[in-house]
Image (cartoon, rainbow, N blue to C red; front, side):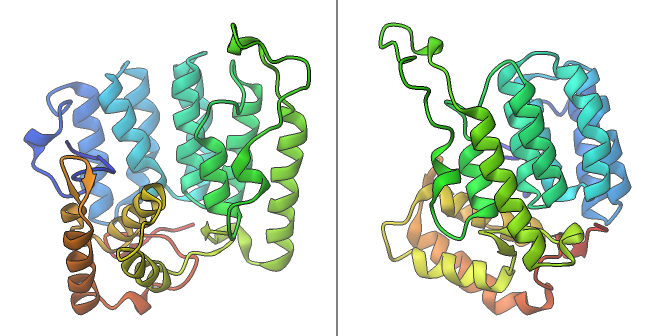
Length: 279
């Protein structure tokens, strides 16, 4: 399936994309092709996809592509119209917040936290704390674990009644963002991974070393997706039927090191298929 983090991410045949023949799917493919050629202004068309009431597959694919091709200023501009199209769909709002966070840019991350805090659901039972942790924490810490549950609100027969310290958690995330801002004065145009400007060569080397270990598959997904997006190098061999193939993944990374100069990518600067994104 196209735009799949557990399969073909950015290297696929049009027939692999289920929504290719729909208007919304065709628009998504147009954004993809233009971005691959270095035309990142096309990302301003993302809201139009959601105005067309796309299928779940197309919506997820759009949220998958969005953080890798959209300049920071455009992310801030398109979030509001997309949010209006999503109305009160908690799952879709979560995907929007995750897309903003995956950019690694601090202002979109702040916006993601604000949107999710104000949405119909909160951080509980969400993947957002994980994504926030990946962007902001050097290792698993308080952000990763999400908001605390309010004592006395736990009901094993009705888990949805539980309440969470969302305001407290939001402050925790914002404090961490402030720390990063103080450490990196040029933060506005910098993409962060694990609390530091993303270093593609280091990310790829760490990923290669992890193939010999029982490494967290989610961390593999994050690194693999970023590497393929930045370089345009096909890493589809990482997965067989949505399962990580460590031997094939290691071989693909070895080819990457042989064929691509990863040190040409300046730390903190996002790229898509080798072309710098104007953040």
